Amino acid sequence: MAALALDTDFFVKELSPNNNIVSVLVATNNTVDATDTIAYSLEKLGISAAGLIGVYGWKHTTDNSVSAMEFPTTAVSSGTLTITVPGGSDNDPRFYMIVGTSGRNPA
Figure 1 (cartoon, rainbow, N blue to C red):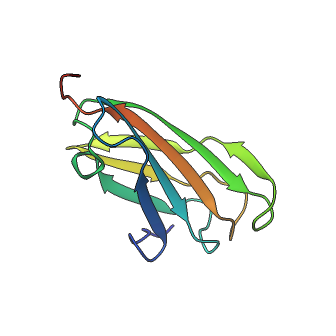
Figure 2: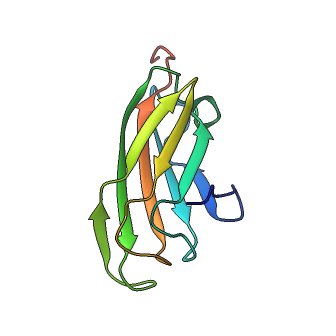
């Protein structure tokens, strides 16, 4: 198991800026292995510490080909979200959609 590094092993893209519901896409390289972990601050994602709604995961079974849903293990501690890549296969690109609330009142 290895901790993955931002901008080296995974990348973050906010999909719904300035909304009360925040959607963020995390994309990994094809070097990610089963049981690797991604740890990231919910605050940096724009999600309040108690605002996580869910994490949805997919992986490419073949690079740049078919995507299959997978179910990562997640945990939140002190405002940090940790995603553990499910067991099963190594060296597959993964995509995680993180959804939560910002804590801001909608206008």
